[in-house]
Length: 287
Ligand SMILES: NC(=O)c1ccc[n+]([C@@H]2O[C@H](COP(=O)([O-])OP(=O)(O)OC[C@H]3O[C@@H](n4cnc5c(N)ncnc54)[C@H](OP(=O)(O)O)[C@@H]3O)[C@@H](O)[C@H]2O)c1
Image 1 (spheres, rainbow, N blue to C red):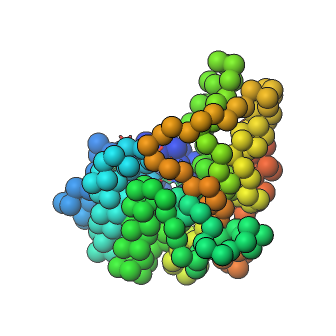
Image 2: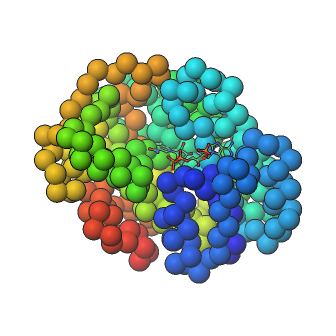
Image 3: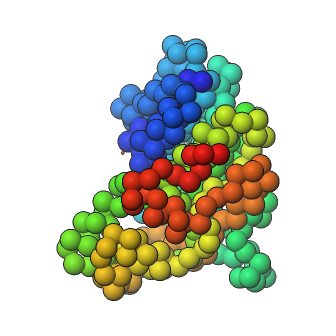
């Protein structure tokens, strides 16, 4: 299979390329400069030039949550119109399509739902609390409505090389500061990328899937565990006042039971985190 990845600067690109190649596929990763997903003509032009493309994985997004709040046009271009347009181009050349969404489509528990009834499964109505979350939700809905060969994957708190480097840097500066709490599931990037490769390889129905590592955790506890894994003192983690323009979800833990019905059980994030930090492959690699 030949797979085109857009948004090659994403922290998913390296582990995704590795997962796909390990399964015998060829990969072409295009940066923002090489393919702007919001540019009408370019996506289709690129795909027509490479008619052997079997799948397109969109890692591009307008990801800066606070910029989305103050620049909604940028948010909806990058998170709704761009992913939709790329999906349309993929459809035109008969390629499968994968695009990544976010737990930020949720923000609070649906009214009346007790905490113990969670995490949230795919069929629950979404309740975004900021423009980024709303633009991702609109992107999901547009792609799912118009692209029958699409996987829309909601993920959360992605822990990849870039995130780890950021934590290492903070450790070296003597404090790991968090402007927010929040309750969600982290996602080890290598596990998410293995799932993408598995979905493309197997005959799993297209549609919306949650892809994250259970169990849900509060963000400070996650950071303490990461800091411990990096052989530093977990007490370096502190939670400060959140003064950022965009409100953040208080609860956005995603349930992964739908994936499990297709024999993809997401590993506990504490196990996968240790695999990742110790340079071992994702536990899903052997599936
Ligand atoms: N990181 C997380 O914790 C998290 C959580 C939930 C969901 N997600 C989703 O997971 C996906 C990957 O996230 P990530 O954190 O790996 O992303 P990232 O590191 O922010 O990378 C996104 C890439 O997309 C590129 N890009 C932005 N606009 C583009 C456009 N119009 N056309 C082409 N490329 C464009 C950016 O390039 P420039 O920098 O040059 O603009 C950047 O290289 C995104 O859909 C994100 O919403 C991430």
